[in-house]
Picture (spheres, rainbow, N blue to C red):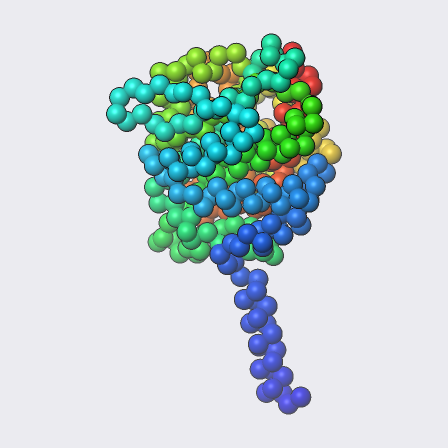
Length: 332
């Protein structure tokens, strides 16, 4: 081959390679394939694909603070299909936040056990633009098409749709593979708060006007906050935020012990930190919520240059799934 033809061919090959590796709008089949290619010692290939698909489905639904109705309806439909029931929430005034609360009743024999509340916020910041979500099949990572331009917003709603997706995917997996087959479970209250980005508006509203929603709980577990906030990411993939003084106190000790055991089996590193205490919905919950521990969401960046990796979604879903099973098996 003549030199100029060789160089032209090489340039074409390199250009095609770079183009194929560049982030593109996510396609369901490509996202499912990336989920299948993720690793987990607990979730099989179809379950991993379902985690990735769940995040894509939920992050595409617009829902900035004060306009959460569409995402609320979608979540209600999915959770009612698992046997959950919508809880009536009190309306006080004309600007009541669009919180969504459901209860999944305890199975037979577990009615006397204390319940557990799972929480993530469904609103996104005002400049979130999920229509500009892109996906890199090579890395299995979602990002924003404008992230390289500092003059443009680069949030697509990974905060906190990644946390919402983890809760939904874990509950759907437990329902399909454990609870339908007779594995007993306690009562779960599923609380998706609105207006978190407006000074914890939805959580503060409930604490003031409906504190009884949190009665009878062993623990509340909130999933929120950027995974890479002052952590050694990607070495540390799971982060628990808890006051150091409470690490040895139940029920938080059980959660932290299970986190250590899960990471040992999965070959992961975790971190315990106090960074983030007081800055999420859990901080506005009343004392009876027992909400002194929360998990960081599988999203990186804080309202700018957001990124969510499918592998992190899978790790978080697998951990929450195993934690709920473990807490039921050791329920007081």
